[in-house]
Image 1 (cartoon, rainbow over the protein chains, first blue to last red):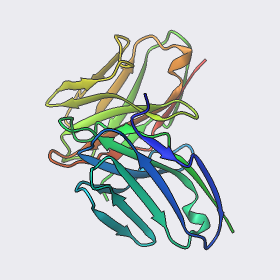
Image 2: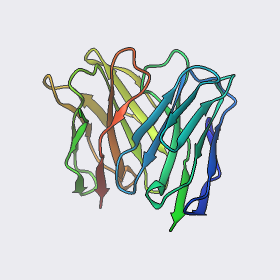
Image 3: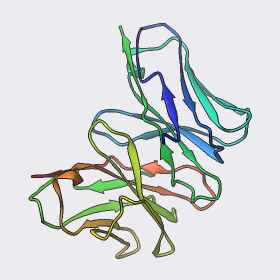
Length: 113
Length: 113
């Protein structure tokens, strides 16, 4: 059973377009992280969301945690080729250690110049 | 900026041999983790370590795996008798007590031949 489902699995867009990727679950998470991973490298933390309904912005990236803390979205405005990569969401279930996270399969984003 | 460092970056070993993967977590962090990512698959939790003992482990972390914090800075993952299916990227991560996110190293690519 997939605890965290990410969609779409692949996304290819032109530079300048906007996009949204989703991370959904039937489970409630105490926190949810978004990471970006380049080929052959480790996941790099982008943001952590903790409170239901929370919205965080990181330059052109906007992260939202669902009110029920079961889902999250990542919106990128005016995508650039440098945004290309694998975007992973990872959730910590309640009563688990910080950092013991369940990862989704990821969304592979390609931004073409 | 503090970071998690892993060595070696790439290790090739013969099936049946023992390997030790090394990690230096962020210095003031208290929780340490190992994750692995088989090529093309999702990041999977292996084990978490706190206060000099394993706090949680997954089904993947069977008797051939062990972890150790031999001194105040290193955190190691030992695979006793490697199998072909152990080939993967192994990521070390660490987090601070009370934090909800983990910071990942760049990974060690283990290839078992």
